[in-house]
Amino acid sequence: MHKKLFIPGPIEVKEDVLSKMATPMIGHRSKDASNLQRNITNNFKKLFYTENEILLSTSSGTGLMEAAVRCCTKESAAMFSIGSFGDRWHEMAVSNGVNADLFQSELGSITTPEMVDEVLSTGKYDLVTITHNETSTGVMNPLDEISKVIKKYPDVIFCVDAVSSAGGVKIETDKLGIDICITSSQKALGLPPGLSVCTISERAVEKARNVKNRGYYLDLVQLYDTIKEKDYQYPSTPNLSLMFALNYQLELIMKEGLQNRFDRHLVMAEYTRSWAKRNFALFADEKYASVTLTTVDNTQNISVKGLNEELGKRGFVISNGYGNLKEKTFRIAHMADLTLKDVKELLLNIEDILSIL
Ligand SMILES: *Cc1c(COP(=O)(O)O)cnc(C)c1O
Image (cartoon, rainbow, N blue to C red; front, side, top):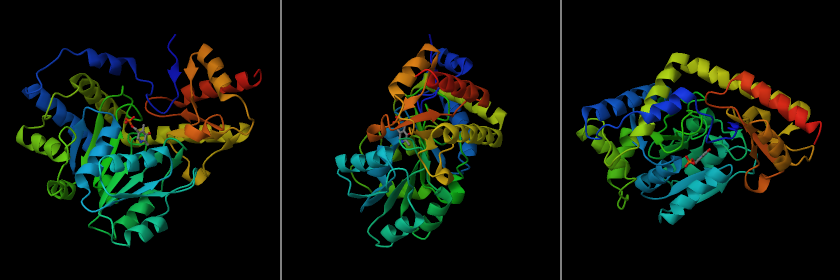
C-alpha cells in the first residue's frame, strides 16, 4: 500500500506529474532540449519573482548550496544557522576549503536582522547564507527584515536556502536583493527528487569568474555560460525525465495561480497549527512558524515511532523530530499539492490513534 507522504520531502507527487517522467527521451543537444529548459526557466522566473537567470542542476538542493558557497566566496562566508540545514551549509564550506564562520541561533528561534548586521559590519565577509525555512525545526526566518539589513552591504553575495519553501511561499527574489536563491524538486514544488534550481544574479556570476578552483560539475559559471552559448542547454547530460515532469508541473502551478498556491499553503499551515495547539504545542514561536511544515512539540510524550506505525497501517506517514529533536517533536508537512482535505483527514486519524495509543 502506498503511504501518503506528509513528510518534508520527498513529498507526495501527483499521478499525472509522475507519468510525465515516462516521456520518450530526446537528445540533450536538440532544439527540444533547449525549448524544455527555456520553458522551465520562464516559469521559474515568475515563481521566484526575478529577472535573473535560472540554473538547473542534476543534483539535489545540496548540490547548488555547495556550488554557491564554493564558487562565490573569495574572502570568507558568514553562515547563519537556525538548525541542521544551516549547519550543513557551514560543513560544505569547511570541506571545500572555503573560509567561513558559523553563527547559530538557539533551536526553535530565528536569525535576527541585528545579528546579521553586527556580523556583516565587521567587513570580513563577502558572502552570506540564510536558511529561509529550517525544515529541522519548522521555523521560517523573517527574510524581508533580514534582507533589508543585507542591502546595506552591497558587496556581499546574498544566498538563500529556500529548499523547503519555494513554491509554497512567496519569495520576491529581486525585491529582496537575493543573489542566489536555491530550491529542490522534491519539496514544495511537488516533484520527485533529483533536480535542484537556483536564481543567479549577474554580479554573483561576475564575482564567481574571479574565484579560483570552482570545481567542475557544480561550477555555476559553466552552468551559466552554457545556457548563453548553447541556448538553454546543460553542460553535461541533465535529468531530462525530471525536466519533463518539472515543465508540466510548473504549468500546473501557473494554472493554479501563484497567489492561490501560497494561500492554500497558509490555510493548511494555520489549520495544522491550531490543531497542534489544541492537542500538543507548537515547537516554534507562532510568529515564525513555517508555512510548509509544522513542528509539533510532543508535550503528551507519546511514542512518535508508535504513532507513525499506526498511521502507516492507515496509509499515511509523518516525520519524527530531526536529530536531537527526535521523539521530542514530530513534523507534519503540508506542502506541494496537498490540500486542506488531506490535512484534515490526517489529523483526524492522528486523533483517533492518540485515543488508543
Ligand atoms: C531538504 C532540505 C535541504 C537539502 O536538500 P536536498 O535536496 O535533500 O539536497 C536543504 N535545506 C533545507 C531547508 C531542506 O529542507
